[in-house]
Amino acid sequence: MKLTKYTHSCVRLERGGNVLVLDPGSFSEVEEALDGASAVLITHEHADHLDRDRVLAVMDTAPNLVLYAPAALAAELRSALAGSGTGSGAADRIIDVEPNTAFDAAGFEVRSFGGQHALIHPLVPVVANLGYLIDGSLYHPGDSFVIPNGLTVQTLLVPIHAPWSKVGEVIDFVIASGAERAYPIHDALLNERGLGIAESHVTRFGELYGTVYQHLSAGDSVQI
Image 1: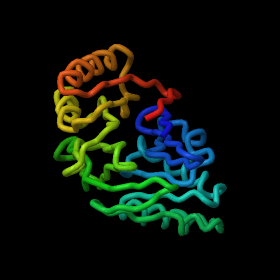
Image 2 (image 1 turned 45 degrees about the vertical axis):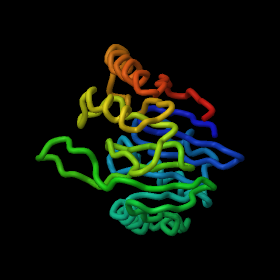
Image 3 (image 1 turned 180 degrees about the vertical axis):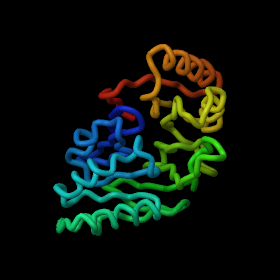
Image 4 (image 1 turned 60 degrees about the vertical axis):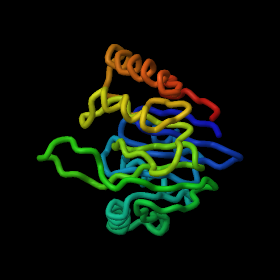
């Protein structure tokens, strides 16, 4: 499987001609990431994980692209398409996903976990958030530190920095996952100095518990 990182939390997975994209948000290269994709998984509704206008515009011109999202968000997107008067049938290709379910997306096996976004502050409403386990090995948690229950993650995508976390929680997430390897997501709000500090901690403590952390910049690809 080829993994390509885009800015912030967007990643593109390719295998055997199948293309699956996760979280093409407002900081990301949405059109590039979705080029030729058959499915897109959305973890939650925040704009840095879903650029609604750009993603729906792509769906309007890509008749085979299917979008999977938490149920309330999926309903909002279908309503937005209905209000726009588009005749592309894109609304029929927006699928509800509940926690703890399994399905096929673009030829990839997907399982969903979690249920809600990590707490930012008691005054900030908590929204639905899903983590996605792809082919039983790659885990994208969205904005959460939920670990798939009863499963060993081989490749972990790590939210390296967020308004809802501190570096100690990032380290604990990596340790708890037991992953063989880890790569960064959710990094667009850090400058090079801040990213270097956070990644140095994750690299050092990850190695102590058997996880090899590797930095990826936007546009970098790895085989996993």
